[in-house]
Amino acid sequence: MSRRKRIVLPILFVSIGIYLLIGCIPIPATRQLQPDLTPRPEHYVGKRKDDPIWVGHTHIDDAFIFLSHHVKPYNGGPDFFTVRATHSYSPQWVLQHWSVSSDRRRFSMSYSVRTATWIAPLCFTAWAETAQRWITFDVDQNGVITNSTTTDHPIVGKVQSPAQWIEIFDSETRRKLYDAGVFPSDAELRHAQLQLEQNRARWAPRPPSSQPAPSELQHHDVHWHPASP
Image (cartoon, rainbow, N blue to C red):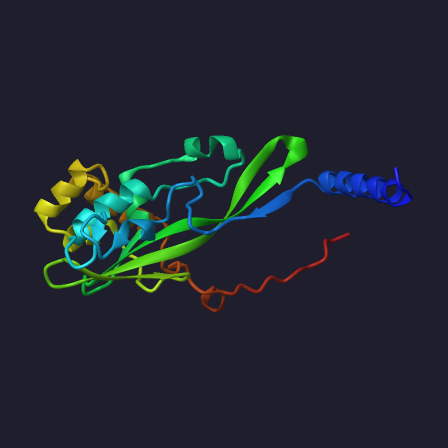
């Protein structure tokens, strides 16, 4: 073994050992996948007939159903190898990630992309580092998608209350979304609205007390007399 190898190899092994002892190794990701390793929503959107969301033809309710089934929550790990078991999916979760403009002409969904994978060799585990994105659809007066935009910040305001979702979609569309498993029933929305109003009332500032102010309290002079011997 040459002198150079005798010097370089120990230094290399020591460096690797120190690096492993630090704990975590980041591996950059392509940002083309969600945390569960499925394609990000833009993968399904295009101008071809065979695209699941065909710009210029697909209605927003069909896109709502498709993306709600293909964009799911991720709780951050920690085990990379069981990432698909970390989903917690429900129609209520779906609504929390959709936003709609006041004129009903823009629909936006938030989701996460994988930006890196952190590996902890000594712990035999790995987890995803993520970043949030928003995909926004413009729709025409018939509800047909005309354009899609991706941003790293929200450009459509949140729906402020459960009851507003009853106004956003008509009864037939709500039934279609409910049957697809991506939308609560009308009864669930009304119940959620009632709970929201009750919580607001419970935590609302209470009116000032009717007790008299300190300046209004009667003042009684107290005279002290020493006790008689």
